[in-house]
View: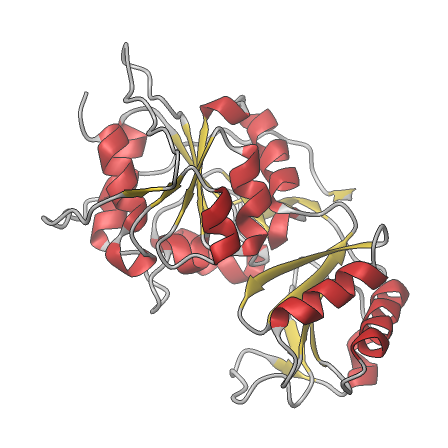
Length: 309
């Protein structure tokens, strides 16, 4: 892992003025779950609130609802901190952080980046060896025996451009770069994304994990996107780094997520919440299953914890 700057960041997030929604969908505890205690003696039960972005804090239209904004304001008013922990690289999540007035540290790139949102500066960033990445892709294709994978790469920080092969998606977004397969390895990269048109994501991920064991980290963060990252990279690693700088422990942390890449995130935290739209593997290990992201599941839980003194 490359450290760009070791300066600690302790700026608090600014308050939101959005109004909460009136209805509160029912919270669904996971089997055998113990609901967290309310805050006592003026101190929040969980002074660190760690949330994923896509499928968790963000709605399907990539916005944060007024109710979720107001819930985050409750967190800040109670003296707790909100920490974003996302698979998006810093360059890709910046606009969402700005939109909610986010300040301080954020964990980006599946834990490979520690980003200071207040200064718009990367403090830590990890890169992926290109020859190793290309080798893992080729060995995964051999193991699957189903033809070539469609590929994308995230180029190295600070640019973090998303570059794809022509058939990576049915519709290419304007902000994406297009490249032939051989061109993907021409510049430093931070991760590779793989997908196959006919082979299930789980099989692609399992094959990549087998051939890359000990050499790379493999995670599944979105349908049709299997990510290959530097060895030892996951959200718990980034969360640990951020929490150490901020002075929090796992027992003081509640975490929210929706996909298998959030399993390390929820596993590290003292209390883990899966969204109602979450992958079954995440639901199975969570302490609680909240309503879906479209139903303000993050707010439902945070209101219960922070709305009453």
